[in-house]
Length: 240
Image (cartoon, rainbow, N blue to C red; front, side, top):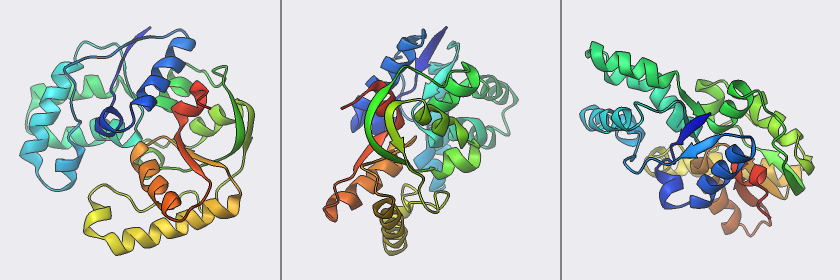
C-alpha cells in the first residue's frame, strides 16, 4: 500500500522528528510512504477564528494536492478531523468540491487510526523503556472517536510500563488560538493536567497531537518536572 504523509504545520516547522517517526513505523509494517512537496496547511486555524474564505482557499489547495493519494495519514487528530468533519461545511455550496471532499475524507486517517483500524495492526515491533501515560487530545477523542487505538499500540510496546492518567478525557487547555485569547483559563486547565501527570509518576506523556504535547511540554519545563512529552510515533519508532 502507498500512502501520502500529511505532515501538518506544527510537525513540519517544529517537530520534524515526528514525521520521521511516522514514516519509519509505516515502512516497518510494509507501507510505502510518499511526501508530497506541494502540501501546506489544512486551514484549521483560520477556520476556527472565523476566516472561512481564507480557510476555503487553503482547503482547496489541500484537496488538489492529495487528490490522487491512495490514503492520507496525519500525525494529528485535529488535522484529520478538520478534513473529515469541517471541510464539508466549507464547501456546502459547491457540489463538485463536496464530492471531492467526501472522497478524500474517506481516505484520510490519523496515524494510530490508520494502523489499528485500516491496517489491523497493533504490534509494530516497537521497544521503549520507561513509564508512560497517555493524553487523549480533544479532536481525536471527541471527533474521531479514538480511544483504544493509541492504547492498544502502547500496550504492545516491549519494555513500556503504561500507567493511566486521571481525568484523561479533560482538555489540556491548548485549543490553538484559545490558549492566547483565553490565557488565564488555558493556564488553569494546563495546571490541572500537569498535576495529573505528576501524580501518575510517569516519565513520559504521549499523545497523538503535537499541539497538545507542545503545550504540556512548555508547562512541564517551566515547573522543572522530569517528564518528557513525546508523540506516539516517536515511541513506536523507538526514540530513546
